[in-house]
Image 1: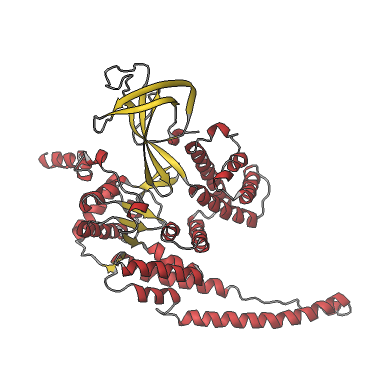
Image 2: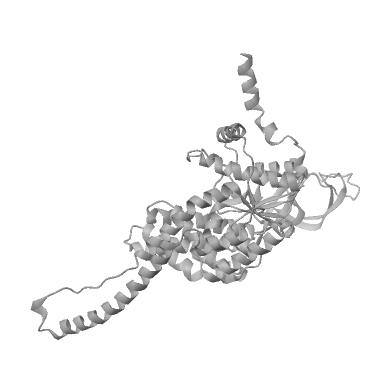
Length: 496
């Protein structure tokens, strides 16, 4: 009975080990990627190391240049686990490349039809076929030579050669692993769905790969007291807090654990294209890499292109609604996809033609009309590109920081205004996650919940004159507003 009670106690108090310093939940404010980019460690995940196998020469050169700058400043880190995973998956990338090029080989044969020999068009077709076959034989010879080159690659393919010149011993960070401790961590993560790795529990290593990479990141923070940007294409919920099917922020458990071991440093996750953008790659290179990220996601989707299209359409509609609500455009919204997309043109959205094509194919599929399989595949690609474009539009995100704040009608905060309270919002800039500041507004609503992202909406029929408040964090008296309409923003998770 005593052992059972102890086991139950550990289960009841598992949050205490996650957050041993409860006050830091309110006091810690991570720095943005812009604030840390010049002095942090950059840790590269396996999937990001593999991206260059699908890019061109110009992209490879710029990737090399950015990596070289980080290596020279001793800030680039390849976890030992990542290096080992790369050794396995690199071969698969080369096999895929070989297969794709091999399938480019062509042949042309009209066939032998003696009965047609008297027809002039048939004789002309035979002559054209002979000329074409000469070109095809020349083309196939080139393809064979390319394949021969690929088959000669062992560790001397262009990507591996680049990495061998960059990733010296000091770049690869290989940590000592206590297998018993690792297994305990994985078991606990799986039991309570804690990050990272619980989504990989069915892998041959039981999800150990992500946890080992995380231990490497923690060791960097602990030993050097520096922030970390983790460059990864992984968007699963064991790394990301998600809303409406989209990754929003790294899991808070990860941010807090890193903060604790690094004594107050920040942890961020960026896609490879966002990482290249942060460190000055050209728009052409960023776009090429972004397309490859989209292609990788297509390959991860279900086998039915039509199902993929419907699922992506739902996700895009949610993302569009989310964006319009955050940007204060709900009043202009007509509730129709193409009309709402056009609202974003003044904010840099340029994919209108792609949106029209995607939506046309989507409507035909939904309403049971016959759609060519090629059109569906192209629409899926367009949908993923649209989703990426929507998610990259710069805008401010408003997060409830303190709801239900008392406001006063006098500068000494002695006369409470009974008819109204205030909500304090934390504003951040998307997609950089840069902290903008705090803003306070009057409201009569009681639905606000701390930590929730809300829409930018107002009731202009209710306006309050000058008011003051006591800062909930410092108790300092501050001016709330000189005059303000009522803020009525809604929780984006519940917005329909």
